[in-house]
Amino acid sequence: MASSAISSRDSGNSSQISLKSVREALIRLEDSIVFSLIERARHPYNAPAYDRLYLKSSGSSLAELFVKEAEHLHAKAGRYENPEEVPFFPEDLPSPLVPSYNYPQVLHPAGASVNITKTIWNMYFNELLPLFTAEGDDGNYASTLASDLVCLQAISRRIHYGKFVAEVKFRDAPLDYSSAINNKDKDALMRMLTFERVEEMVKRRVEKKAMIFGQEVTIEDKEDDNVDCKVNPSVVSRLYGDWIIPLTKLVEVDYLLRRLE
Amino acid sequence: MASSAISSRDSGNSSQISLKSVREALIRLEDSIVFSLIERARHPYNAPAYDRLYLKSSGSSLAELFVKEAEHLHAKAGRYENPEEVPFFPEDLPSPLVPSYNYPQVLHPAGASVNITKTIWNMYFNELLPLFTAEGDDGNYASTLASDLVCLQAISRRIHYGKFVAEVKFRDAPLDYSSAINNKDKDALMRMLTFERVEEMVKRRVEKKAMIFGQEVTIEDKEDDNVDCKVNPSVVSRLYGDWIIPLTKLVEVDYLLRRLE
Image (cartoon, rainbow over all chains, first blue to last red; front, top):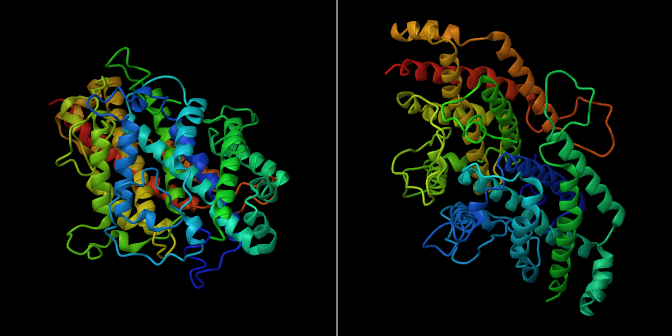
């Protein structure tokens, strides 16, 4: 039920965080990511939503405008008070209308500011989106962009969770990590953070989730499992293997490099 | 892949619509509704988001403010140009920034204005939400309300699809329906629109979807199917049986009563 590794469960002790709770949050986020892709795939690619020339007299695409304004609204409702949430357009966000909620401060302050949303934005729109949407234009740009926002937020949250992963691992072996951090040895850090067997398992699991959540469910049990899925499971596996896992480790390394400041 | 019964597939002939395409859209919307409930259930109930006294100096709840502002943004991106989309707060919506998309005009103009979003709003917040969220407050009101909005929009879209269902059925048997419409005989219309066997099948199917989409997927195949689901499947069955199906029929009757104006 809990969506967060930290905010509710461990709020009694503000510095407490466990690898188990972080893992559970990451596994739950896999479901969110798969659902969000399936929902986006209801619509075709819808190119005008991403074309900077489409909205005359504006220098932005409809997508940029939509995400910026949506983030304004989310900021007013307090979204970015939670250290797990990272905005794509952090400039000029309004203050929350709501009283501040006492989120536990788990991260090291210098590392908390790691933000690779620009990389995620480019990956999502330029590489991922064409892989799982049909060609075409159905005119439903608002609901298309609302779905894009849900995808972006889920993927970004997953990747920036790397900060919490890194913090847990650092606390578990501070001496080993401190030596590599002091030497600014990115390669050594990357090696310490890489577990190929776990990464393969994650890729297989998200592929399976795409098959199960993307199937056509009917009342009759079907014999044939090789049915069309709403999003190709191999695309979801590739999303993790090519982008989410490497970018999460990039966040982890960036976080650790600032961990002793 | 198509999310709509009409907009893309049948756009060659603006008045064409088939029961088969409407049924496919309704079945696809079941998946969206189940996904949206599962995503909302990541967070506990989060009462302050719905409390009119929480935001001082405003007469609204954070939920009202959030949905209103989100609908403004969606209106700018053209959402309500699509006759399948019905806003919760239709007052003072801004004009679209985007050129108008030529949605096929399938509905009778008088019936197109049927809007029961107030009933849906009250049902969702007062009856449904407490049934599938845990008690508690995790502070994540922005992402909670964003999930509420997705739930509301999916449920509302499903219910207001009744207009298209009614239009198809009317075209299929105009004489039978016209007689009941001219007599303003709501009971006769309701009887003509009720197929208990189909309704039972829909309830069983959405219950099964809640089981499949809400399960904890692991790489190992599990023997035990009686695992906890993220949203209780019986709540989803009840959502359809107690609210979605009856409210859809209410929309169908309201639409038909204006069909000959």
